Length: 283
Image (cartoon, rainbow, N blue to C red):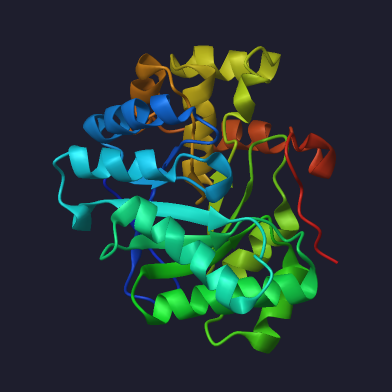
């Protein structure tokens, strides 16, 4: 894989004409009033991919930022997620359609809609997936996928899905939590892997190995971690509301982490013990 990435790079989604930007901007639980400002700053900086969710309670503000940015909607990529089914297939469908309305208006769409968690049980996952398939059929989302799904959850979908594999699996990924089993499985099946918490919420900002590498490349620890995710072939979704950080987190396209340093970072893996949010269950 070439490491000559740019911020405008796109990756093709499986069995689809849709392409996803290689770098995304997360708005995980950004306060509603702040979300619009941060999203606008990100778009001004060059990000073209914003990742929200029903759980974050800021979908409407992401939609406002998209409209106010002045950028053509076709050049932007917006993801949202549903956490749990709403009690019946009809209600679940209504809940996801409401999200699209909040982001894009009555005639709008989102680019990617994900099941946010595998925790709703087999019947819940089935109901969620079938609602997403309906949304896809109607053109109100361009692609559908999952988040925090392990091998067993994606395999289970195969039994009931009209659309398989999922276009994307969004999971926690960084050097301390590399989730190699599910990453390898996704790669084998052509599923694009998105990395949430790629900068580990700054919990590792003082890690000696990381600090040493940041010095070597004359970059911040966050920039090294985002670049690492890009070179692993993941789609990182760094999140910050700090305007300077929004800019610096996108300034990762003018250096390359050498193979020996990638190996050093690979060596930090702690398996599921390294997760700060959630490691998936594969079996």
